[in-house]
Amino acid sequence: MLGGRKGILFVISGPSGVGKGTLKDRLLARQEGIEYSISATTRPMRDGEINGVHYFFLAKPEFERMIASGDFLEWAVVYDNYYGTPRRFVLDNLNQGKDVLLEIDIQGARQIRERYPEGVFIFIAPPSLTELAKRLELRGKDSPEVIRQRLSHYDEEMAEIVNYDYAVINDDLEYTTLKLSAIITAERCKVVRFIRRDEIGTAFDQQTDEGK
Amino acid sequence: MLGGRKGILFVISGPSGVGKGTLKDRLLARQEGIEYSISATTRPMRDGEINGVHYFFLAKPEFERMIASGDFLEWAVVYDNYYGTPRRFVLDNLNQGKDVLLEIDIQGARQIRERYPEGVFIFIAPPSLTELAKRLELRGKDSPEVIRQRLSHYDEEMAEIVNYDYAVINDDLEYTTLKLSAIITAERCKVVRFIRRDEIGTAFDQQTDEGK
Image (tube, rainbow over all chains, first blue to last red; front, side, top):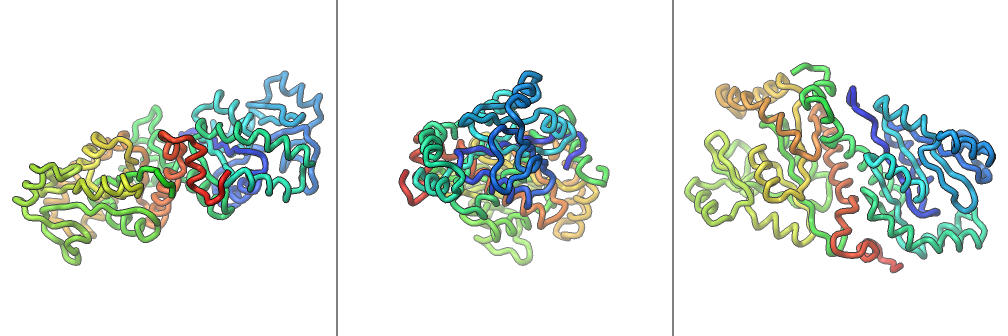
């Protein structure tokens, strides 16, 4: 939108089963000018998932080699699988002035916040624990044991909200998508985004074809 | 939206002729749950304006009495006329948890910022000085002398942007309204809005009919 402006990193996170993935897809379909950062993982591919689209599916030794080379912006072990965000894609886009969207688990978001606090952190919350349990069961992707494990972290995960910039309750997919889209639009209008080192006048001139 | 939550004060400002009034009308028609604070003024009523709708039109002695009684949240003299924001309407609504919209000139916004820094300040900028001059002439409400006077403050007024939270260039009415609406929606999702003194869990429970 602005020449010379640095891209904004938007991080969507929240408990597993809250609907982050669906929201991310709907958001990308609606919102222009944002690049999605595809995560890498060692977890098994699920039905309908495509390598390089939903995740980069890697073998453990490969993932561990990348960790050693510092190729991840963040990585974590979640339920015995590695998850990570390849560093280069994110930083290259931000430096080129493009906004980037990350959809990651809560551990990953915490690491990103430490390393890139100027990111915009959005917590997706379920309407309730009961509703979250229902969604995890309906999704049918996890064994009852894994579901129990996920839900056992509920209070601890919800307590993370205080470290986020925004929190949105996912009680209605369409309305929640609209809120996420509004957050992106609003953040792009923030004065701090286009002040930086330049004079404001210069920054504004870059937004329009007419000179002052 | 949230029981116990304090209302948010949204302040829209910018140079005269930039389109604040039109944008405010469009925004109010689109955005739910926001109360518009009607300003008081001693300037002459323009064609089509209604007392108590567009402004409270007051005589100078009456306005000065209200100043003396501390009845204004801010007041200013602009081009020989008084403008002011009646205090009670704004504070009562905020305390009842209702969001309030103010559309005021730059001097007024500066005073509000000093007295109510937790407000959300949005600067409406024209695409350029040339465009602003064109709009003031097309509006046909001011004499060439008044227009010249207004434009002479352009650089000074634009320099105020750095004190605002958001800045939106009004180059397209529909798109600008959408951005303003997005800012309101996004601000309502900010974590700081519903943390306050309460536990986050309590605040979230108030957003939904289901208990945890």
